[in-house]
Amino acid sequence: MSPGTRSTRPAATATAPSQEARRATREGTARYVARFASRFTEDYFRAMGARGSALAVGSIGLGTYLGECSDDDDARYETAVYAGLAAGCNVVDTAINYRCQRSERAVGRAVARALADGVARRDEVVVCTKGGYIALDGAPPATREAYEAYLADEFFGPGVMRPEDVVHGGHSFAPGFLAHQIARSRANLGVDTIDLYYLHEPERQLDSSAGTAFATTLRRAIEALEASVARGEIARWGIATWRGLRVPPGAKARDHLALADVVAAARDVAGDAHHFAAVQLPISLAMPEAVRAPTQPLATRGASPQRTVPLLQAAQELGVAVVASAPLMQAQLASNLPPALRDAFPGCETDAQRAITFVRSLPGVAVALVGTRSVEHLTENLRSAR
Image (tube, rainbow, N blue to C red):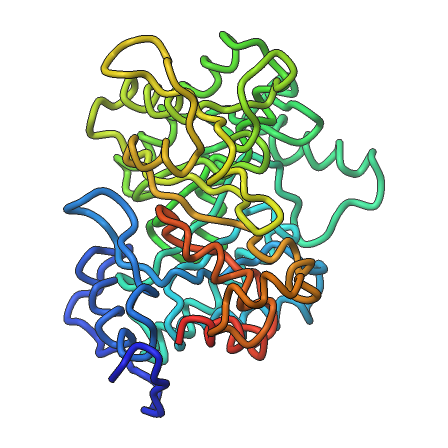
């Protein structure tokens, strides 16, 4: 079958293994690709991670950020994630704070149903989540006083963390807090091992502390994550950012993150066997800094930083996978693109497909995360890679 030909075969079904793995594996994800490869263009499935341990992933991932804290949106996400797993999307991305933990729980139900129905095996699905923002439970508190009582009851009273561990009123990388959140996320998701656990927006800590204090905070967080890897709670970890990796270094950029510094901190904690595997950041037609803007200082063979390169180049040189968020800019790029951009993607039928294809086509991008609560939109998005 040629790459552009659409298959009309029945949905692929995963055969139950004799002993189910508890996390995504190289062998499992390769098996998933083998079932779906003929339905997509040759560049749809990609390797994510270091050679020898790379996972095979669909380059359109399932995001779960937007929506109301409602049963209706829970059901929409559960249906869309299940449909995505059945259609060739084996990366699911969420965060414990998304929709007051409801997105994680919807993902957990969708994955459990997909496994029970034979749509996928556990070792074929890459389940990703994030920790750092204080997660509410089910619905936002009605008042500031109710929020403060929640913090006291959930975190401060039991000794999970201290009030001084919280910055900006709702963000923490305290080791006890991260351990608590990982345990809660595993329960929400219904998994023994989270395949990729991101530190959520480290720049929130960076712009609240001096460089030395941030380095200490980051190191303690990495120690906590590596300990979680050793216990089998997470398989690998990363950082999920909004601005930090897109802004250049300088006195005015207090929230600038240097990827090389994070890699160095990971090596300092765990040596070359560290589990820092991926970064997530916005990449889109409207936010192309990762490919165009020199924001990342890199050393030359042990010397002081002598060059500044775009994030995608830095990640490639440092051996870190890149996951793109917000390729549609929360639907802002799903329509009304300029005619010149439409002409640049002749194989695409819609502006949403063009915007997604732009991100997928960038060298070094493993996955473009597209949030969808609609199976119709999911089907449209996947047609860009058929």
